[in-house]
Image (tube, rainbow, N blue to C red; front, side, top):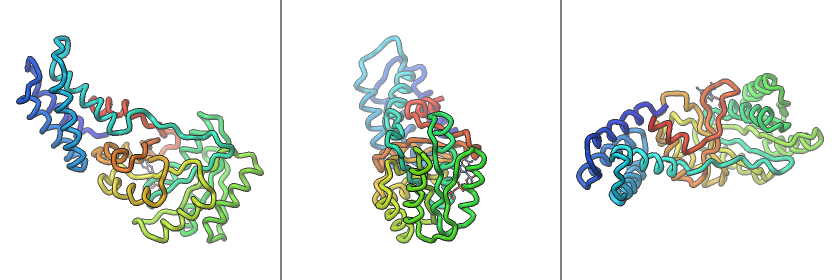
Length: 295
Ligand code: GDP
């Protein structure tokens, strides 16, 4: 994950090796290298520039600390700023309500259905909850089957109405069903399209209005870089979601989406998904991610 970014940052810090102290001159070239590394990792230029402006200011503002070299100091400043850019501290999923309704939205292929299964498994095994999965994709019968297979693997009931073409009704009926069955978590997997379109947005907005979810998680494929950020903006404008799920971080992703979604839509990344297996869901910790990037 983010190998290229990690390597590039590492070589930027190496420029400071052997320097006795931080100066305008050595900071300028290091900062420039960091900015290039970020842009090449698919971070929007303005965000990269603001980021390195803050890093430069902090570095030059530091008092001389003899115990720490300029290189180490720069690593620390960049690590703190990366963590801050990604949200600072972790954002928890709010599951206090009984039942808690969680709406899952995103483009087709982003990993929504897989994530829904992972989340149900996570809440069942780690939080002792009793989840109900809801297949609310009225366009692709295969999506219902896919969720059913996942549900069977993790021992979680899947609610579906294959003949019903009204996603709002299905979601409402599912909530009723959950209340009768004593499920305290309802995860609604909505339909996705290949691109943001009006019909899809209206449908998911209608489901939101009808079931008033406690959490709306926007699922996005981290491999799509800046497109992921743009899609997040479009969904957030319409849905005002409560958190982001970044999927496919196990792939050869450059990092732009992870680094800039929070900054762009002002919503936290809550989970990351790093594989197709159902037990690979991870809570997102900005500081740990920053640490990982810096190796
Ligand atoms: P949906 O259309 O949004 O419901 O997406 P799916 O859940 O069907 O996922 C699309 C494809 O991506 C499937 O082949 C999944 O197995 C795969 N996938 C989902 N999440 C991950 C992940 O975190 N890592 C990897 N490598 N593949 C994933």
